[in-house]
Amino acid sequence: MAIYDIVIKGGTIIDGLRTPRYRADVAIKDGRIVQIGSVAAADGAEVVDAVGKIVAPGVVDIHTHYDSQLFWDPWCTMSGWHGVTSVVIGNCGFGFAPCKVEDQDRAMLSVSRNEAVPLKTMRAGMPWDWVTYPEFLDSVDRTPKGVNVMSLAPLAPLYGYVVGVDKAKEQRASDEELDQMCQLLVEAMEVGACGWSSQISGDLYNVQRDYDGTPMVTDEMTEREIVAFSRALRTVGRGSTQITGALETAALIARESGRPIVWNALAPTGSVNQHGESRFPHLETIARLDELNQQEGLRVFASAQIVRFKSEIVLEDYNLMDIFPAWKEACLGTLEEKVAKLSDPARRPGLKEAIDALGGGFGAARYPLDEITVNWISSDAPNAQELKERYEGFTIAEIAARENKHLLDAMLDIAVAGLLQVGFGTTMIEMDPQAVKEVGTCAVALPGISDGGAHTKFVTTARFATELLGYWVREHEIMSLEDAHWRLSAYPAMAVGLKDRGSLTEGSPADVIVYDPDRVDALEQERRFDYPAGEWRLVQRATGYERTIVNGVTTFIQGDCTAATPGKLLRHGAAH
Ligand SMILES: [Zn+2]
Image (cartoon, rainbow, N blue to C red; front, side, top):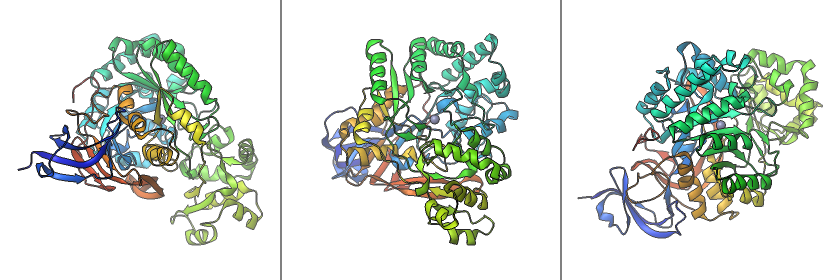
């Protein structure tokens, strides 16, 4: 008669607490780790052979945008494929609650632009069985989940609900309105939000805009508003904040709230990400982080960018050229309007100027335009067969030479012919290992910026845990595996107040991964037609993960989903 539900035999334990690795068995029963030591195989209803494998806590991914996807994809892939067992949603101030019924489409329009989730997918895939934030959390609670979910209270929906999104942009909230928003924030915290989030990025250098190209309502938050929300969190006395914006704004919030903050983002100098080139010397930023934490005594954590960028540019939903007015204008509106603007010869010089300003690169990440390859042209395009034969597999440089055109004209002419449903594959932008080491091992660095569930047609950064374990640790030894698992699990869990998760400890919930440290790796980018309303997304799966266990139940075996949904809504402040 088995005593335990699962026994993981003979693996090397890395517990997420920076304890030096050791070999032991792990026994799991009723969702918890009940013993780490020597356990007989016969005592397990199921035995996992982990000889030669690492047994580690599941990854805690604190920067995701699965606020819509979790309703149609319980495992929140790509995260679920990459060892993640808990996600935090509601980042950057973007989300869907509270939201009046008549504003639902407006809320989805915002997210279709700032996080580039296809609009028709959200319309088809979201249940919208809530108005208030507490009702939203109840909806998440009853939705089957393959990962644990904790949620921030994003600020943009609060402005939408209390003031009205467009009105709030014309005139900042009154004292009464601000008061009301703070009360709703406290109400959200009372039912389990883990804090609040906001994008405070201003107008310049902002690629996460509203659907009409204007900054998001939170982008222009004043100090008065920032302080009010921070003090509201102080009165609650728990939780944390997350912002995408200036480090000094994060420091102000930490000071006023007395709570931890996760600041986005610390990136190696000169590196690129979906928001553009890192404009700040990372060593200076790290020195300032040390000052804020060690001297001033604040708790300012930094989301650290460690993922190399490679993308597929699809102009149908593209927003990562939005720092250039010419591009922002051309990529706004309906599909028909975008096609008309991108084919307009009068607009081309302005679009080319932006490419020149990027040194011949494209997108915030400056992918070399000449090396971009036509990966895919939708079969729905007019004359699809002919277009595919003529262009698929060729680089823009080859096509431009063949057709005697400017590189950008070559690219845009194909995009327009394919009604913007053309995938332009970029090269990988490599990063300097020394710089990644400095950033990744900074005292308050939380490696990640997954952005899971966002920018779904062109960004695959949700593979970050695999990139850290398989590329930066194994191939470049930027940190020990003990350090890596602490930074992937226990440390972020602590930063966001995810109690009792993130480590392998007797008595704690059994969120466990078993993987092969010699093989763990991300697979190539691929297009998957698995989004509601017939939409597709760009993803990367993983290899080397033997097993993923959430709350004591196996969700993935060698990359294959078991269809189990043991994930829970983790309400902040409550026991789980
Ligand atoms: Zn974000």
